[in-house]
Image (cartoon, rainbow, N blue to C red; front, side, top):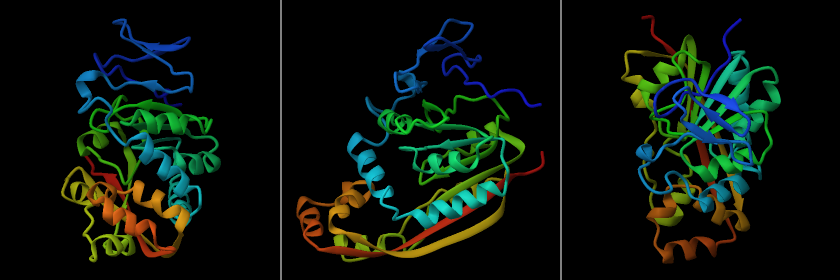
Length: 274
């Protein structure tokens, strides 16, 4: 039987043990468990700003948009792909507000699931879903887990560190990365900027890393019609929000609906033999 997965102290790398309402290591570094049930394992020295990651407004927009089912085809394909791997342990790195974790928890009833995000607001939203999932505020570039902890690590539209993925993945583990295709949200980009904007995913980082082998590749395509009341949430959850002028935003919010293609790439990577 495999050992239980433990959080690793972000300060001294020793194992953290749950003690009442906090986690602590043998060096007496202590991390309180929030009332929502998550733990903050992002020390000041790992923060790039006072409140790193997505803001409350972005997280709220994403949650409200996703709950309308616009990305349901992606969620179904992702869950089916992961079920086929039959993981006993899974980490969602950059889990956001927990939309995909909730889908996975419903199907992977026996697996141990963890979710981390650098955004405290995102983890708070995820914790409010009341899932049987271990959640932590933490950086994808310094994952608070020991070597070889997980059967599967997933990253959906989130930053990754190939060094950290290789470290926390079991020897026979799998990394699943979801990123945008060239046509993803093309309708939104054209409406805002009059032309499509190329997307950059994380695939090249893994494709060029000799520690990983590409073993599966899927594409999920579709077209959605976004209702007027949901357009502001779609914009608010994308990087386009920061590129648009107030005038562009106002023009977008005045249209009655938005038609746009969706294009997701789902790639699976195994670790190369040592």
